[in-house]
Every structure is written in structure tokens, then in C-alpha cells.
Image (cartoon, helix red, strand yellow):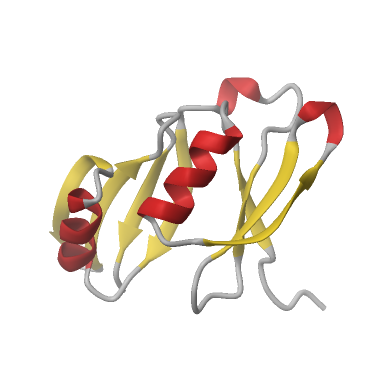
Amino acid sequence: MIKSLKFVSIPVRDQDKSLEFFTKKLGFQVMTDQPFQGGQRWIELGIPGASTGVVLFTTPGQEDRIGTFANISFLCDDVQKTYDDLNTRGVEFQQKPKKEAWGTSAIFKDPDGNAFVLSSR
């Protein structure tokens, strides 16, 4: 039986630049960083307090996905506070916090232009 989502993969151009962004600016932790096919590395990151990880890896043939909307939503307790903190750290936002009937959200980008939702419940 399926128990949870292990990780999501984010396609990136420069693994070192992405690793620095996700660890230094977003506060993720390195779980695995080892050589993997075709000169890439398998970089798996953990989100403090979460069981789902993030992998910074581009599957060969899927380079056209780099820099698109990632269909990934990161959950936080307070979108405005998290937005303020990440904005101070130099994270680029495509959409400032916006209140909706279901909660609040903002959209930020990584160094490759991949866009992610930051939301609350």
C-alpha cells in the first residue's frame, strides 16, 4: 500500500547553483549528494519537519521542463511572514502573498526560473 510521497524532482540546469539556493535561501538539508548518470549528481534534499524530499535532477530528455511552473506547492504556517523572510534572503517572487477563500499563497522562483507556490491551509 502506498504510504506517502517520497520526493519530487525539480529539473535544474546548474546543480551547484540550485543546491546553494535550496539550502542557503530556503533552508533545506542535504540528504544525499552523489554521482549519478551522465555527469549529473543525485541531490536529494530534506525539508525540516517534512517526510517528502526534493531532488535536484534533470532526467535526460526533459531539459525543456527547466524554467517552467513546477506544480509544486510548499506549505508554511504564515505565507506573509515566510514571504518577508525569503524576500529578505533574495528569493525572487512572481506573485506577492494573495488571500483566497481557501488560504493565502505566493509564487516564487528558483535560479532556473522554475516557479513554485508557497501556501497555507
